[in-house]
Structure formats: structure tokens, C-alpha cells
Length: 288
Image (cartoon, rainbow, N blue to C red; front, side, top):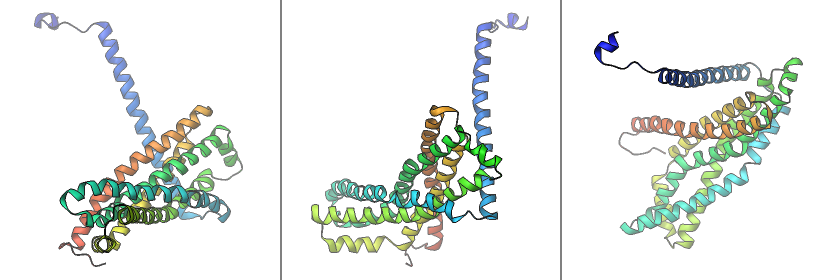
């Protein structure tokens, strides 16, 4: 009666049904994501509990370390080399316009050791190792091997997740250093031997502007990157949907989520470390 008096038309049954469907759809999606975040937090808590209460056996640790470290080394080294060369090509075109091409060493090496090196190594690890971990554990979930481990009294998180987590945590700093080194070598080779930049000025400005703190920043970031890659990949594998399609979706989702998380962490850690740098060296002079 009030809607008639005010002149407003009441919503039609079709509009009301569409609104209810929309609320149910998006409400269900929000609830599913909240539940997934809670399950992931519980999964991380179980991993941390086993990590600090009982060490994994050496036999379960060597395989993941070989997969993460040794087998990832060639692709990380190759990619790092070409990233250094690409930086040299793109930076030289801009710096040559203002006569600062001799300072390319500082720009290339600073970009590599602080940002591109750790992010590059983490991206390669997420694509090559993270997807493989998710697919492997997803296949074990689909074929009920995880249930068989629990039936035999072995905790799958301790037996499967902790060794992979430790392998990613311990070996991604080495992969980051390798990416940094090969990127520096690639940038030096292209700048000095192809672009004809004087190697004395290239090395002088590199040593002047790039310090051990910058290298430590990249290695410190890589520890966080390796941890989230291992946790996300193992979680997606443990919660894989049935069938071959579910395994494929788990591998794809592990890489996408790992890559997005790496970028978010890189931003947050960059802000925090810049604040730390301004506190330690307010004048801008580095001690080492």
C-alpha cells in the first residue's frame, strides 16, 4: 500500500529472483574463499608444527633438494644471462641520449641483485618446481596414496610437505645468487663487447653503487618467495579435485597463485627494507 501511495513500483518476481541468485552466487564465492584461506592457514600451521617438532629423514630430503636445486640451475642461469643482456639493450638506448651510458653498470646490477634476480629465480622455481610438486601431490591424492600413508600411520604433511618446504627454503638463495651472477656477466658482456662501453667505468660505477646490502636484500626476499611457493604448491596438490583435469588445474593454480603472491611480497618487502635502509643509513652512505 505504501509503495502505491508513494508512486514506486514494487520489484517484479523475476527481478527479485535474479537478485537472490546474484546474492547466492557471490555470497557462496566469498564463503568459499574465506574457507580456503582458513584451510591454507591450518595447512601452514601443520607444516610449522612438524617442522619444529621432528626433523625429516635424509632420504626424503635429498630427492626434493636435487629437484629444486640441481635441476633448476641451468634454466635459472640461462634466463639470468639473457635478462642481463635485455637490461643492457633497453637501458643503453635511454642512457645514451643523456650521455650516461658509462653508468649502465650501476643500473643493471642494482636492478638485478635487488629485484630481478630474486623475482626471476622465484618465478622459474614456481613454474618448474611448484607446478611439478602440485601435480605430483595431486596425483597422489587422486590415486589415494595420501590416504594410504595415513592408514599406515605416517603423516603426509611430515613425510611429503616438510622436505619440499625445506628444499625450496634452503636452495632458492643459491638460485638467486646464480641468477644475479649470470645476469651481471650477461650485462657486462653485452655492454663492454657489443656496445663498446669502457669496462673501467662500467666496473667502477657498479662497485660504487651496488653494495653487499643490496645483495642481501635480494637473498632475504628469496627466502619468503621459496616458502610461499612450497606451501602454495603443496596445498594445491593436497586439495586437488578428482581426475586428470583436477590435477592439471592444481598445477596451473599453484603457479598463478605463487606468482601473484611473489609480486605482492616483493612490493611489501621492498617498502619495509627501504625503511630499514633509511634508518641504518640516513645520509645515504653505505657501510659495506
